[in-house]
Image (cartoon, rainbow, N blue to C red):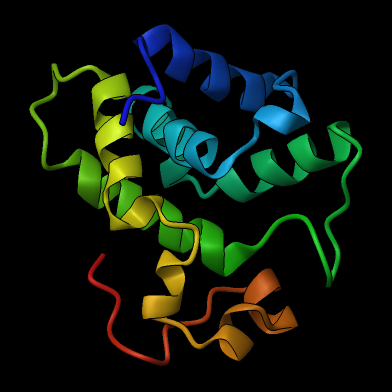
Length: 144
């Protein structure tokens, strides 16, 4: 399955997230991982400094969303997704185009929207506590 056709596709998502110009309908499950891969490769300092949450919260507000107990930014999902994307990225040589990696990731079990439920129970993952802070999985150890 091909979702992305060039690194320009990935860069558009990553930069659109950073500068808050990515259209909200384009902020899909695949786009979340594309942005994660782009940030990991092209803006690792932002990731290392823990700024991804602030970036996503600002994007949500800029596109008309909210960040509250019911919606918007979710810390546990973001941290888990960033860790999974980093683990996936490490499997590839550094010169591998990001669009190929993103397509492979989306075609993997991580590409299924419910992948986190292999590690977290639904009540724990979708709790208010997990939205605001990292909560470790309660079903099985997280491999990343």
